[in-house]
Image (cartoon, rainbow, N blue to C red; front, side, top):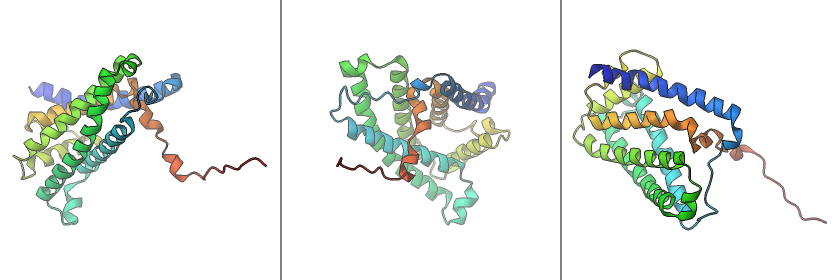
Amino acid sequence: MNYFNELLFGIYPYLAGAVFLIGSWIRFDRDQYSWRAGSSQMLSSKGFRIANNLFHIGILLLFFGHLFGLLTPPSVYHALGLSTQAKQLMAMGFGGLFGIICLIGMTFLVRRRLTDPRVRAISSGSDIFILLLIYVQLILGLVSIFVSAFHLDGSQMLLLADWAQRIVTFRGGAAAAIADVNWIYKLHIFLGLTMFLVFPFTRLVHIWSAPIWYLGRSYQLVRQRG
């Protein structure tokens, strides 16, 4: 059991991270024409814009919430007057809210992808796989909130944060840090790492080319002829 724990949570994170970075670079270098989201809005637009916005807003807020929540040392939020218990309650509250927003959008997108004949016809196996993977991961994350309700002392959250911080700082003992956490957290982490692993082989690569620079560019001037 210790071997599998070390494999999944001590070695697998670096394997997934390496494939994520190197694979993305190779795909961009060799296959730039596939570097896109592959939108299907023109095939079926009814309700798509609202669902798509809900999904993207929810998933981005969840991503940055996990990022800052896991990688912020306790000393930082303690200095701001926030206790471990209070931080966990905030994470549960905001995570639940953002998760529900994302779930509403994703439910429509999954149903549309699987049941609309036109959208299904242009969907690749990787399109369906990654959408279902994110959907399952989202549901699992929402379920984990109920599990967290039985650990309001923040002990599980501290162990998860310690694991994440050890991984990103290349310190040993990461796998041991979460050896005793609830299995639902471990499954949530495993699926999250798997998303990084398959990232370069799916439409998720379009995240790298998000048009953030549009926010700072000059306005386009349009004048009438004559």
